Amino acid sequence: MNETSQPAPHPRAGLHRMVSGFSQSVVLRVLRLGINVVITGLLARHLGSAGFGALAASLALVSLLYTLAELGMGRVLVRELLRDGADQAALMGSSFYTRLTTGIALFAALAAYALVFEPAHASLLLIYGLALLTHAATDVLAWFEAERHMPAATWCQFGGFTLSVVAIVAGILWHAPLWFFALTFIIECLVTAAALFARYHQLGGAWRTWRWEKILSFRLLRESWYEIATQLTLLMLLRLDAVMVQAMRGETEAGYYSAAVRISEVAYFIPMMLAGFMLPPLMQRKQSGAPDYRDRVADYFGVSLAITLPIALGIVFTSGWLVSLLFGSGFLPAAPMLTVHAWALIPFALGIVRTQYLTIEGKLWANIPAVAAALIINIVLNWLWIPAHGGLGAAWATLIAYSAAWVVSTPCMAATRDLTGLMLRGVIRLPHLLQDTRARLRHSRFLGTQSHP
Image (cartoon, rainbow, N blue to C red):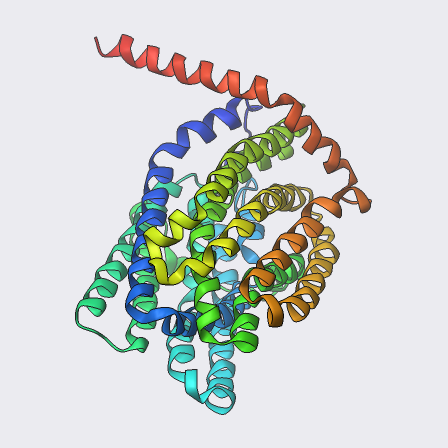
């Protein structure tokens, strides 16, 4: 990303790259999601709702520390690497070593907490916590994203995932203890990190040249603290429910709720995957002053809605069948929870687009009050509804909180008010956008036929 000048992007180049770039990465990620939900169902059947609930609640708690260990540097690092003349060695090193130090400190704090306050689940918490020691290695993903090598990164992630699946299946067949299944997550993290660094080296990267610079490190932290606060609050919205359900209704109810969450997460990952493809081209349009930049943001809103609405409806009408198929009839109490979570996909997807836009505009701070208010709403509603309604109450709290954070708050804040118009414009432009995409795909197939008679 060190070119001294770049031509202005074609008005539809970002969307065209998104459609063409989806092929390999999307197939791998969708395949991974499909395998993951099947394996999770098998594991839940093997462990039962109580064992599965204990595993899921422990991971949910440690996930909050994973977010802290990221220090919110992901999007900021991508943005910096995309700048002309970026010093990649200094950027990568400053981020990596800062995050590595943070991960070590967080693991020490987790160990003390687990041994003193959670001795019954200490083994699970400590095993999941081992990922904090290597979590900084995921910084290399920013380089893959900035350099448009995400398909290569996806293959590395798929390799680590495949080994963890083999380990889980072996554990089920050999009736391994509960802690072993937490260890399979660490296997995935380690193998993925090793594969990413190996591929990074093959593509011309040199991690040995990474260097930590104090001034740059503190600058990245200053710019990313908005992202830290937003990501941590967002993850609390995503994960705190499972922890509260376990604390207030027990591991069995937490198992039902976690089953619903695992199925809905397959759909929730789609807008996050879309964000990885859209951020670089939108960032380049912003930096080059492309006149159609805001139109592309509007298109991004429209595409997200067009993808997530049919998915949400599909889950709503098949929730009972999905739960029974994947987790067995013993987990059917999770079906109503899944139905509510499906509707929450729509405001979640719109929130991802909003966050990408605020990242590009340097206004991530605008996310903090909205998401913080949603977190407060979620905690209060969980406190009121979980005792009486269990996981279903937590699911409704999630839907209301997501809607408040990313839909209701948007026209209410000066920094995000203009996004309301972009959302509406994206919906209005959607038919034209879909028609244009179909025409491009037909044209690509025609050229392929012409070149291969």
